[in-house]
Structures are given as structure tokens and as C-alpha cells.
Image 1 (cartoon, one colour):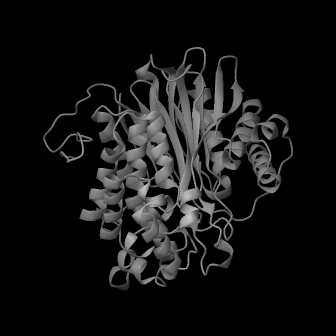
Image 2: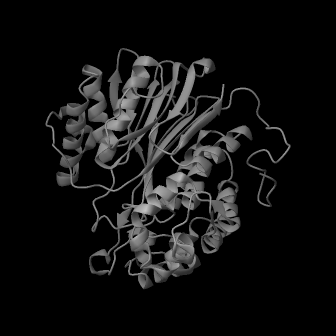
Length: 449
């Protein structure tokens, strides 16, 4: 990448050397170009949060079926130098329901992706947010080759997408779904990203762009109003903790998917082979939290009831980034349905996520293990795959801690996992770090040792 007018380049341009040499860290992501964007940020001296934010913004262009600007997610962020270096922080920004969702033609969720990523960057990053936006903006404007990951999703919902002329023009040019490697150009989305870069993220929630988006979402049958955008805020929350041996702690976001992963992970600590029962225990806890609400930590402390299943759940996407200093971020994103509502909010270019009042929300499942005494990173994993997401994260994390290898011997279908592990901790033992993407998925793992 070259220079841009808002700040330093995020990575080396053609023929240029990286500003960072030696160990950079590692990245795993469900969409390849997002992983490469993150690695460029690390190579330019950015930290894990910088790289994760740039990768997620890239996903809004390259993987909008699961991680669009109209969606949401949850992340865990850890820095050995932040606070007492003992525990990660959860940044939670799920897709929420608007006040008019019940009366809309095809109710859309309120988008929290931009605000959530901004909060992650403000609390844990080092680079200007507008600089991290630029790669995604450039990809949307200049076009990006459709990845295998995206094309596989497109094949599933190509028929319904034909119902929205705006979406069809982008994803089904000439009436046919984009093929792998075919250029996908999103000029309107590029303009929206440029507006966020120049006017700030707040413009999407309480400025000119907010009014344009709300009207376009209503015209697309989404039912979002301006007050929905103003009122929807991400949260920075304490994490759920699970003891790991005598020295480490596992941490999870205090949301239903994080709770389910925490319960499953705890069960696997006692019996690593009991994958099925661990998964059902986790789903039981998530079902309880969804049904009755309450304190996720209290449910985790006492939960022992399995659940056979939850209703059919939507897809999600994951990524994880580790930098050279042991800062780490692991995230899950969702549109609450493949391609959300299947409709784009007019000239904003933003694909609308499905409202949780119409579709059950995704289980956002990721976990991280650190050593609070050493103030050091050990392992992290993101889980996807509908109802299999919590067990995927738990199994990958459990295996990583036990073996020092980043992939579990088996993550049951439909679960998929991405994982990063430093067997002898980081900071301190760069050569013990490894990362891997689930071999059944279409993402990649990149980094340097």
C-alpha cells in the first residue's frame, strides 16, 4: 500500500521494505484479503488492535455476507502493558433490533460494526482510525477479486438476492453470481467509508450520513429510524473467567456465545474427549441467558444442565491477531443471516443485517488464555458454524493450551475454528508461537517467526 492523505501508509508498497523486521506476530481470518491487510498493518508497526480493526473493515468490503458494515460483533482485546496486564477486555457490539422492527417489511438490525470497531481502536489501538479505514475504502472503490469464502456464501443465497436490484447489480452482475476471482466493485460503499473517514464514525449515527442511511433503510423495508442509530452503543465489559491449571486463566465475552464457549471450555478442562457433552452444556447456558437474561458470570459459576440444541442460528465470521509485543485481539462478526436481509440501503452501499426480532442472533464465540502472573499471552481461538460455534472455540482453545498447537484434532461439524498459540507465552518466547485456520474453511493464516 502506498501513502494516503490522512496519515502514514499501513504497509509496504511495491518494492518497499516493511518498517518492522523479524517477528511480527500472526493473523488468522476467515477471509484471505482481510488477513493480508492485518499483516500489512503489523509490518508497518501497528499493534494487534490496529491490525484487527483494519482487517474487520476490509471484511466489510470483501466478506459482507457475514461481516458487513450493517452488522455487528464482539471482540476480546488483551495487552500485557495495559492496566495490570491480567485480563482481556470485551468489546461488545451485537446487531440490535430497532423500535420499528416489528412492523417493517423485512426488518433490519441496527448497525454497530463501525461504532464497535471505533471503540476497540480507541481503547486498544495506536493508529488513527481514519488511516485504518483507507484500505477498505480503496478496495471498495477499485474493486476486489471475489474470494472463495465469499463466493461460497453467494451461491447459497443468489436467488433471494435477485429480489433487490441494488444488491443484484453488485453481487449478480449480468444476472449471474460473481465467480471466484471476478471483480466486485462497490462504489457507493466506498463513498460511505470515505464519509466515515473524513467526517468521523459518528456521522453514521447522528449526522448527515445517519439521516441518509435511516431513510434508505426504510425505503429498503428495514424499518430503521434515526433514533435507533443514535441510541445504539457498543460496550466495553469485563470478561468471564475460567481457571486453566494452576497458572493460566481463560477469558470469554459476557454474551450468550461467550458464555456457551466458557462453559464448554471448562467442561473440556475436566474431560478433553467429551466434546458432545461439552457442546450441549454450553448451548444450555446460552439458552438460559437468552430465555431469562441475568448475569452471565453467575450462570457460568453454577451451570450444569445440557441442552440438545438451539433453533437454527445464523452464520458468523472470525479473526484473531497477535502482535510482536503479546497484544492480542480475537473477534467474531455477523449479519444475523447470510447477507442479512438481502437488501442494500440505497446509495449508502451498506447491506442491511437481519433484525434479531426476525432471526435468532448468532452466537459470538471466542476465547483467550493468558497468564495473569507473567502478564503474558498464551492462546486464543474464534469459533464459527451456527450452533457449533461455542464448541469450536472451546475445543480449539483447549487443544492449543494442552498441546501448544493451534488447531484441535477435531472440531465437530458444523463448527469451524481459527487459533493462535504461544506455547511458552508472549512476550518472551516468539519461537513458540503458531497460528492456523480451520482447514475446512476458506480463510488463511499469515505471520512471521
